Image (cartoon, rainbow, N blue to C red; front, top):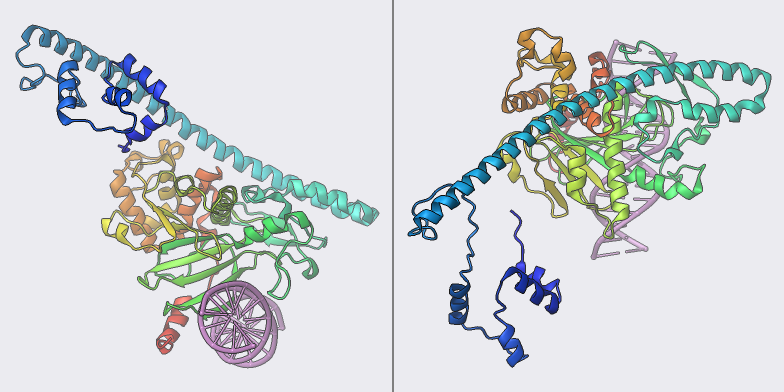
Length: 502
DNA sequence: CGACTTTGACCTGCGC
DNA sequence: GCGCAGGTCAAAGTCG
């Protein structure tokens, strides 16, 4: 499959080694005489080569077919010996096939085990999340009591609480030092997802210690000077999600507040700027813009990492983007040219998807693009990319996690015959256990993305389960349909027509 | 009335 | 230094 330059390989051994190899392999050194007689001239006559081949009966064919082929000139006219060889070949073939069957069976078994382990891991993680949440709540209560007794204990308790902030464990893909640099002990409650039906208590940053700051102030984390560069780079790293959606914005479980809109050069559609409002001082921002070539494609670019607990639905997208950004950065930092191996990243992000993961090295920010618009349509593979982008097509294989994706928002896609994850599917009625072919499934998924922007978050949830093991099924659909009321397109595109000269 | 959006102005970085 | 483009601010407007 990979072209191998034999000459290059030959170059890797010394002449002495090469000579030894040739003797061992029974090869002929066409250059030996020439080398001996004339050190500088390596002229080989074609006749010499042919004669040498005849003499040593060198077979340069690959002989990949082991079946009996009567017309094979190499065996013609050698009846008895060819029969023996054929039998031997058949025997070897049978052995190989047996071996292949064994390996296939083992492979299937391992796949099943992997699926089971993944599911168990997800379940355990959810349990852990809930338990730690409860523990954190109780600690917060005790902290409040301690504060009334002795204010000096606050720091110690904060230290403890840092370890107890659980929901962020899925977000801890970034260096942990940016976590909770809060100086304020002010608390507020956030309504969690209906799935958890709990109140999540978060420490709220005072404006003075705000992690994120406007342009005028440095956007760096103030508490650990040594990691400012890391934090700055982390903030710069971006994850872009391309999704086909008629909705103005994909729902990712977070609350966003629009703080600006701008006409970007080269795109008649305006770009909207959103800031996460789930916690004061959350540095996460996102940009939403329609694709210039195809207005049905919504490009959402995330930047930064949440510094507060998130509902499961938001965890999915947040950890996906965070993981992608982190991997991008860790890779870019470790490679000389600032680019990591695109194959590695892309496969890590979407290891079993037919979608595209694109890494852009274009300045100023390293960007990972998760392209969820890719359909089984070969034309889409011809989409031109900027020269600084790599595009990695993935083999279409039906991953176990895919069923999680497809089942995530099943209620929204009635009639698609999608199953939940493998463990859940076992308990479903028969008609729900029927798995569609993967091609159908993929088409359905694409249709679902097109039909409902929430699906994008569901897909991200599954991606997350691949990356970090969080359970996308833990999300409640209701949390996905959050109160994002901003409308880049309806408002803006109407205005866009008046901006058309731009 | 509070939360949110809109939109013009401003700031910053970059290329020339 | 200047102009441009991206990004952000903040006052005004809108909405429930």
